[in-house]
Structure formats: C-alpha cells, structure tokens
Length: 393
Image (cartoon, rainbow, N blue to C red; front, side):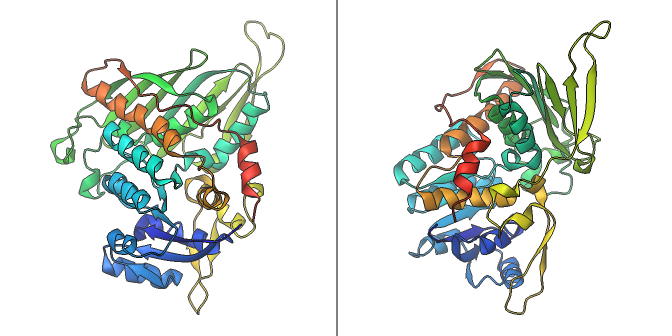
C-alpha cells in the first residue's frame, strides 16, 4: 500500500480520528485544520501534529495533502466537500452528506467531475453489532427479513445554537444506513409524521416544529417496510441509537439502555409448542472485528491509548460508535491507495441520506407519501468485500 497525506478539518470531532490516521501504515503526514486558533493549537500539541491550517481555504491553496476528512458542523458539509473534490483531493465527510436534495446533487456532481474518492463516514455500518448481524444474514441463519426498525433518541439541550430546532429525520443516516445495508435495498417512497411541538426556545433557525419524527420507508425489495424514529428534544429517555432486525428464523434486538448489555438474539425453534413455535433467547456480545484491520489500528476498536511520541503524554482513545472509527479510516485510506470507489461513495451516501430529507418534507406536509430520488444501485454491502479490501498493507 502506497502512503498518502491526510488533513483533518475540525479539532473537536476530528480529534477522535487523528490518532487513527497517525497510526495507519498507509498514511505519511497528517495535518489539522480549524478556524479556532486556540483549539487548533491545543489539539495539535496533544497529538503532535506539526502541520496546521487556520482554514480549509488555506489548506486547499497549497499543493499538499492528498485527502481531507471533514469533521466540521453539518452546515459546512456540502460546501467543504465540493471544495475538496474540486481541488482534486479525496474527501471523507462526517454525516450527513447533505440536508437538502439539492445539496446531495452538488456533492454528486463534484464527485463525478473529480475522479477522486468520496466517502460519507457513517459509523453504524462499521459498528461491531452491525458486523455481527450482517454475518447472521449472510450465513442464511436469519432467513428472509420481515421487520426492520431503528431509533435515534438524543437530548440536544445545551448544544450549540446550530443544533436547536434541527429537523430530526434530516439526521437519520445512523439508523437508515444499517437497515438499508442489511436489506440490500433502497427507499422508493417515504411517509413521515411529526410528534409533539418544540418549545419556542428550541426552534432555532429551522422551519421544523417537531421534537420527534417517525417515518415509514417503502423499500424496493421483498415488500419490506422500515420504521425509523429520530428525536432530539423533549423526549425523556437516555441516549439511544440502535436498530432491530428480524427474519423468518432469527431476530436481533438492540439493548435498551447500554451497549454493554449485549444484543438480544431470538431464535425460532423447530416444531410447534402448542400454539406457536418456541423461541430461544440469548444475550450476545458482538466480537471486535480486528481481523478486518491492520495491526496498528486493531487496538482502537476498544479503549486504548495513543502515544504521540516526541515526549508527549499518552492520549486516551475511546471506542466511540461501537468501535467503528478505525474501520472507517482504514476503508477511506484503502479506497484511495487501491484506486477504487469507497464503500460509502456518493451514490451510497445519497441513497442513505435522501430518505430522511424526504421523510421530513412528508412530515411537514402532514404525512403525504413522498418519492425518494433513485441515485442508482449502491454496491451490495457484504463482509466478504470488506475482508478482501482490508488486509492490504
């Protein structure tokens, strides 16, 4: 694997990825970009990042760095992704790809014209639980799928103003993506409904009146329907970001409180027990899929420490988002080094982003069925592909 140079935009969320790029055998130099001079200085010092830039424009004005990872607030994703791709560099972007259909088209146009790799850094499809459930489906043990459901419930009181009033379904990729990937499907049309009314101090700068939005998504295979709920305010529940998938023979439910409780796996036994078949219930802790990673990144699927060298103190690295971060970084770096499209390229990102945008539009229209644009068929999401592309280097 040839090496590349990567710049990370955003000290706050970006700091979760700095140690991964700095540790990756396929990465040479790493830079940090932030408009906040103090945050830039402190983060660069902690991780011993020697190249820093005060803005993305400043970085793009140079002829340095092959790829840029955008970890800035949502409102910058489209403009920054387009700028990076048009500069001839490869682009990774935090979710969502965009918050409007027009924004999706702008990123797709930039990707098509660039010849560079684009990747939406969706954590859930590299989560240890997702990889476990995916293996159950691919092995045939789960049987044909019948029930797909996901929820993202989080309280954003006290978050920066740009989160106040945020339309819930416009941030639905964490739940939509695993359901569509596991079902190997796209959404044809969606009906959305809002629930409750945001209080005036939580309205922010958006047109959204709802603290909660739910969508029913009509998939393009096997007459499947996926149910998705997202809430950011006024819903008294601890943080929950999980999905449940059920098939003819087996089903898997996400833990109700903490991931440490493990997944609940239901297996229909053979033969009827009076009325209905007996069900075996097991608690399963999904394994870390370190076999899909280079040795240098494998420790970061769990709690680890990063040694920046040069006399710097070791920095704790937490396994946020189900240990998915090292998988995301490795996929992005591998796609660039191998000269291929990333597994979450523009078409895939658009397919996973647009249903939430259309679902929110439907909720504002009091539940009209809304057609979701067809961006083309994403590559089928299978473990074997990630295995084949993850051991080089």
